[in-house]
Each structure stands twice: as C-alpha cells, then as structure tokens.
Length: 284
Image (tube, rainbow, N blue to C red; front, side):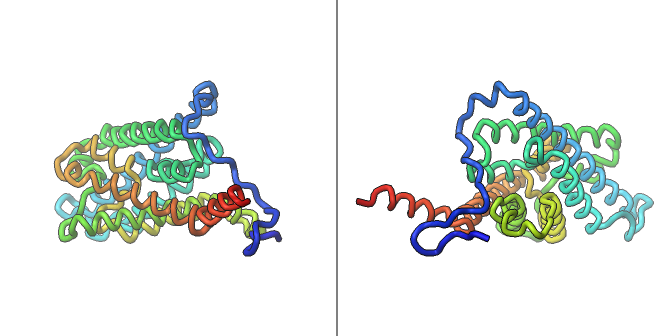
C-alpha cells in the first residue's frame, strides 16, 4: 500500500482528501441539501437533549431519598454516560450522510478550522444546534415541569469543591478527546490504510462521549457541547448555570481548536506539506 514518502516529495496516495471548503460559499443557499442538513442538525440536537436530560432527571428523581427514592435507584452515572454516548452513536449514524452528524458547535468549530465546512454552514449549524437544544429541553420541561425544576433541568454548572480552572481544564480535555476522535474516525487516510478493519465511524465517537462523561460528570456535569449546555441553561434559567456558562463555551472551543491543530498539522503533517509546497514553488 502506498505511503507518503519521507524523502524528496510524496508518493502517489491510495486515498483522496476532499478539497478545502470555501470560507464563504453563496451557492450553498441555492441547494436544498444545505437546508436539509440544517434541519437534520436541529432535529438531532433536539432528540439528543430530550433523551439525555430526561435520563438525568429520571436518575435524580429515582435516587432522591427525601422524595421516596432509593440511594441506589435509577441508572446511576454509568447509565447517564451511556445515554449521552449511545444517543450520539445513534444520531451520528442517522445524520452523517445528511449533515455530517455534528450535533455539537465544538465539533462544527473544529471542522471549520480544518476547512471541512464553510463559515456559512458552520454558523447556521451552530444556530440550529442551539435552537434544537432549547426545544429539546423545553419538551422535557413540558412533560415533567415539577421534576425538571426540582432537579436542576440537566443544566451544567461547576460542582462544589472544584475551582474554575479545574472545570475549564476538564471541558478543554474532554472536548479534545471528542473532536480528536471525530477527526480520526472520519480521516480518509485512516480509512484507506485500515480498510481491512471495518469500523463504523459513529461507534468510536459515541464511545468517546461515553468515556468523557464518566470522567467529568462529577466536575462539571460534562458539557463538551456548548449547545447542550446552552439549551439547558436557557430553559432552566437559574443563576448558577448562567454564572458558570462561559466555561461551557470557552473550554469546548479551545479543546476543538487544539484537536484540529494536532490532527491536521502534526498527525497529518499539514505544516510540513505546506512548507514543502512553498519551497518547491519558490525554488529556482
């Protein structure tokens, strides 16, 4: 199998990288597939928040000993992590061929930095994701308003005993794991090299979400998705989630930036290739 040459240029590749997306692509506005993708991101994020927040509230209710629950009742943190990871697996599988299955502004931001999507598409995806998250949380509240308000509406906030720096670091590292997994699972070079190993891309992405939730639920409740944090904060609308809310935008965006840089410029040697192209162009 052909590989990149280490000396004097590059050999023929057995894979093809898609061309970089234009920053502004006005033609997208004339294509139905563009609007279909935005709708898919909206619906996917709505369903994601509906199932996951309902799971969080259900666990809180069933384990609340002061209101008839049992201390070991409900699905536990493990079950909550499975709900988040499982829903990402399902929804990415369903929407990957339509919108790319982002369902997360941090993922969209990382792919924008890597020139996988245009700026126009990225902005509208993020808007659709945030609106979908609000609608998903509102749907949960409409069904179980009393429990929703009593148990915090699934809103993210920094847990007692942890510093702001710790919470921010948890969100940065957690989002890095997720976005790095997204790049790796969808890398055409990896797919060509490991074509003998059939791996369904949504599976490692869902597992990444699952594993990060296990690690960071005790710290921040696990954001790693600004739309998820924003939708819950808007519908619950209490001061504590809003005071900590910046962590759940700044952390994931920094994590996505680092993941995009690491994958594109170090693992895929984007900087080396760009330098080689520059030298060959300006050689005498």
